[in-house]
Image 1: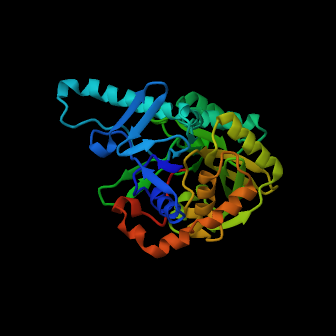
Image 2: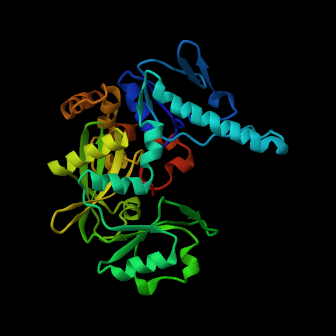
Image 3: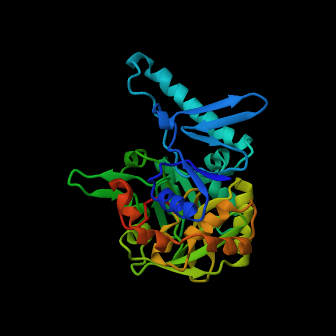
Amino acid sequence: MKIVVLAHANDNHTAPIKWAAEQAGFKVACWGGLSWTEKQQASASFNEGASMTLGPHSVDAGDVVWVRRPQPAEMNPRVSESDKAFAEGEYRWFHYSLAYLFETLPVRVVNKYSASRFINNKSVQLLLAKKCGMHVPETLMSNSPAEVKRFLQKSGNRTICKAFFPHVWKKDSGGVAVTETFEITADSLPADEVLTYAPAIYQHMVVKKFDVRMVLLGTTVYSYALHNPKGALDWRQDAGQGLVEVEIIDTPPQVEQAMLAFAREAGITFGSADFAIDNEGRWWFLEINEQGQFLWLDQFNPKVNMQQKFLAFLTLPEGASRQAIEKQQSIFPSMSDYDKTGLQNQLEPEVQAGVGFVSTEP
């Protein structure tokens, strides 16, 4: 068995995971995504069954494929202008053919492409979470000024506005601006036309005691309280400045059961979910990223050992128990061990950007 990672080897999660797996004796093959260069070429062959090669790597029975962060398909830049639309379409559909083909091969895929496309929709997340018994804030997704006004005016609750997905703007001055969740009122709405510039998510605010980042590993979940001294609505930017404390906490049984039911409905086995905990101790589901960042938890609290837990999850049979994961994790070096090697200093500048492994993604 080998671990096939669909991401460049210098991705900020791939690099330490690859190093730690290899230290424990596992073979790791990284492939950044479909492109015209030799290392990024791919082939799928069909005879009695199907086989696949990704650059210099074969995908073999029993392998584990981690769909970490493959890059969009990239065509040869020398294609003539008149043929670009055709070539782009061929690369795009070949990419889809490969992504879905993994699900038919005798390999384990984390997560299956069909499931990732399904659950990456915020609307699906909220509906499934509610169906599985979680508390979900009342929500409107809209680009209609009339509906936004109606939602804000009928609600007696404080309301927040957030984007569907994170975005970063680079400023001419060299700085950056990022999307953040913010409170909004009917009186603070901009002109109607502005509300049509980009759709948004409007949601009743959970007056929270603290946030929780939950990591799903198959049939097990691990929860971590995020204590933010500023009490910000969106903890991610403060985390990027090292201002968040990470505490290991127990997951209430009913919340764990609901999350595992959610994962079964969604078809995923791995992901990072966010919850807001109110003053009465209720856990409110906010969102999940099926390939969300998780190694930063180790850097904020070395006792988390998420790098080791994730590798145990990858290398054990599907459906392994919590006890099996925590036994297997001991064979892998920790994130602290990786940091001591200095290898992170060899990553490309854009990979090193920010504090540790924190990003603006959910």
